[in-house]
Length: 134
Image (cartoon, rainbow, N blue to C red; front, side, top):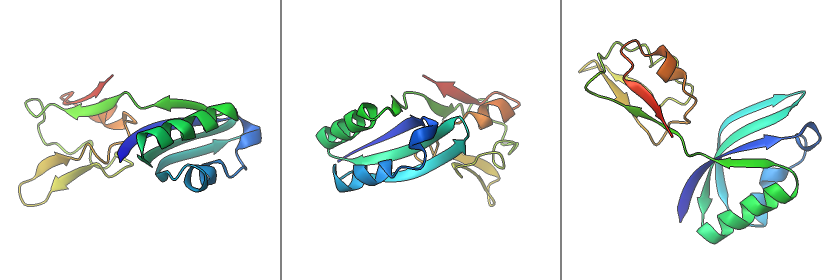
């Protein structure tokens, strides 16, 4: 089994279609919605998919064939512990709950597995300990 994070960009005419349902039914892909935005100009969806690599490739090909723009997440956030002052500025701004404050040690804990690479913590971090890597 493989896990990947992918961004989907939908045209307005695709927003109301059950596209992700087909990933489960036709391609046996499990997915977790990490972030969703629906606007008049279309929609964006960040999902983590899990399945056999061949099935994930087929599912991505299906999405592309119906006009969904698919981008694999090649960027991620890293914490430079040598720069972190544990100020906590990043904790409340993280929409994914990937950054928490340990209430016993008052240390900022970063869980990269939960991170959706939105970059909000990068801009909020005064000592620039959070970095977006590509």
